[in-house]
Structures are given as structure tokens and as C-alpha cells.
Image (cartoon, rainbow, N blue to C red; front, side):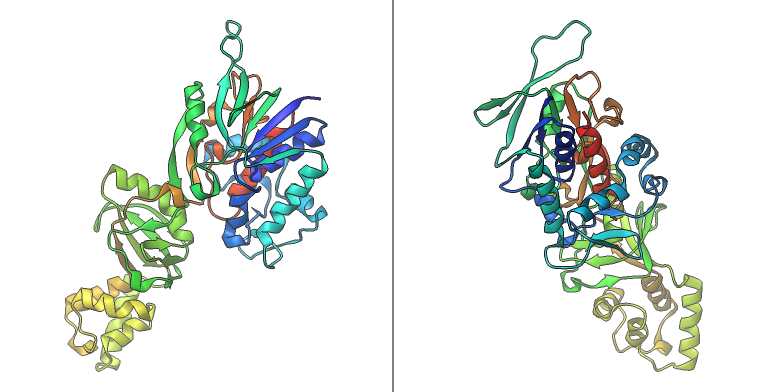
Amino acid sequence: MAKVIVVGGGAAGLVAAWRAASQGHAVTLLEANGRLGVKLRISGGGKCNITHEGSPKALLAAFSTDQARFLRPSLHAFGNGAVLDLLRREGVETYTRENGRVFPLDRPGSAAAVVAAFETLVRRLGVDVRTGARVTALEARTTAPEGGPSRLAALRVGEARLEADHVILATGGASYPETGTRGEVLGWLRELGVPVKPWFPALAPIPLARPRPAWEGVALRNGELRLCAGPAGRRLAAFAGDVLFTRPGISGPAALELSQAVERARREGAAWLAHASLLEAPEAVDAALQAETHANPRLRAATWLQRRLPERLVEDLLAEAGIGRDLMLKDLSRGGRRTLVGLVTALPLGAPQPVPLARGEVAAGGVDLAAVDPRTMALRDWENLRVCGELLDLDGPVGGYNLQAAFSTGYAAGTI
């Protein structure tokens, strides 16, 4: 029986602790917050998108090639079916939405029920759960056999020094620091010589240089968010999905998915955003506008636009375009007509502001995957140190993929 310390009581840490304890090891779970699973409790707005349906191959296709290759062993060992079976045995029933996302059955505190199930599992197996226990330093062995692996000698928790046969780091990334995921462990690992990649925002809302607070809550549907290298520049990336206006900018699935590309483009040069309709091509909209002008010349341009865009947007857009709200279609200039068509087919959102790392659902970056054994999550060249969950350089799309990666890598890390 080995002595195992798991640092971090989130999705990955809870599974790692459960798995290690189920193999008969003496496990201590350290959580900096006053309770377990703080970030898990707020995931999906408290509804908790546990995982995504589909085969391992389908889930892996959502990640980049390198990330998918790394995840393959752990996802096959502990996939979505295994996670859901485990939760079901603890009384958490789930359902799958049309888009493949899996949630607990809707009821108040759905996410809390998932956390409670995992907490029950670890406590039942005798895991020593310590909340309010923030690790403050990693202490490596000062001397090692020539050419031999490094070893973590101890952890510092306040004034206490804790030793273990195996240490599993599941401390999360750098998003939502109010949940305790401050990302400082990455710096400690770098100091120990572990290859790491800096934290980078991903799955985050996008602030705009020209925010629209009056549009807060308005959604743009049936289109794609496009990232270009300027107002008339080439397209850099695009993602189909809803966009939701917020006070500082935009959120919603399309914005979250595109946020990492937006921030990279912003840092490297010009970046420009537009929401393009997937239902109507510019030529078709122009033809429809001309037909409407001949059939109903006294129709107001504002009325025509309201039929195609959310009403709360129309007055501001017309004012910015210099088109009077009472202007009739018959009085539109050629330039005015082009403007209306452009608003419908590629609504300009403008330049982004810096994307906030702290507000991302996950953070890109973390421990370099090349430094980790994908079967065990053990750090190469270290004999007793493993990492899992968001601390790894893994960042999948919205839809339960990142939680599944946390569960799978946590299981692999806890298999000792």
C-alpha cells in the first residue's frame, strides 16, 4: 500500500483520489477551498455539462491532433460511459441533449449533485479529505543519483511539510481564480525544470473595443462568428453558433470557441469580428431588397431590417449607417442598400479587446504533453510526480469535452 497525496479537489482530483483509494492506497486529498469541486459546481451555469456522447474516436476528434493522441489511452481506459455509470450508481441520472451534451437530470443543484456523488465515493473509501489546505510550495529532493529520475521530496501546506510515495497534481488552470484555480503551480513546476507552456485564454467571452451595453442579452442566431485580419482583411477563423451580447462585448458558444484564435490574432496584429448569416447570401438578400423596394416602395428601411435582425439592434445600426429610421426603401441610395445588405449578411462587431484569461471556462497552456506519460500521467524523469486535468496543456471545445478529459486523465493518474 502506497501513500498518495492528491492536490486539488476538482473533477480530475476527485477521480484520481477515488481511483487510487479503490486500489487500496492510503490517499490524502488536499483542497485549497473550503469545500470540494468549487469550479465543478458552477460549470454550465450550475447544470454541469458532464461529458459528450459518442465513441472515444468521436470525442478525440474534437481535440487537436497532438492532444487527441495524448488523450487516447486514458479516454479508452475511462470514457464517457464509465463516468456516467459511476455517477448513476451514486444516484445521479443523466440525459443527452440533441447536440450530444450530457447533463444531470434538470433539478436545482444539478452540478452540486455531481460533486456530492464524487465526494461520497472518496469518503466511502477512506480518503483523508482536507479542505482549506492550500499547497504553498513543492520541495524536490536536493540530490539524485547521477542520471536517475528526480523525486518530489515533500509538499508545503502552510507550516506543515507533507511527504508521500506518490503526488498527483490536479490543481486546475488559471481561469476563474475566485474558485481557487490561480495557476501558480505551473510556475513551481517550471522552476523544477518541467517543460510548461504559459497560460493562454480559451473558451472565454470576448470584450469589444466598442461595446454595446444597450444590446446586453440580445442573441444572434443562425450564423457564424468570423475573425478577420481587419475590416476588409482575409478570414482567419470562423465558428458557427449563437453569439450573445454582454455589457463589455460578446459571449455565447461561437465567441467562446473563437476566443483563443481572437486573442492570438489580436496579439500578432489586426483582428476584426463580424457575425455572418448562414441562411442568406449577400446576392440573395440584395435581390430580395430590390424586389421589396419595387413591391412596397414606401416600406421603411427600419421595418425591413427588423424582419432580419433583432429589433433592439436596428435603431443603433441605422443611426451609425446614417440612414434615417423613417427613410423609405424607395429613397435608399445604392450605398444605403449595400449597407443594409451588409448588416444582414455580415454584421460588423469591430475590433476585440484583450480576452481575459480569468474568465475562460478553461485555460490553454499548462504542462507540455511531451513531458507526460499518457498512460499514467507520470512526469517523465520524475519517479513519484503525476499531473492531470486542466494543469495539462489540453483545451477542447465547449460541450463536455474538457470535463471528460479531466475525468479520464484523473483516472489514469490515480492508477498506481
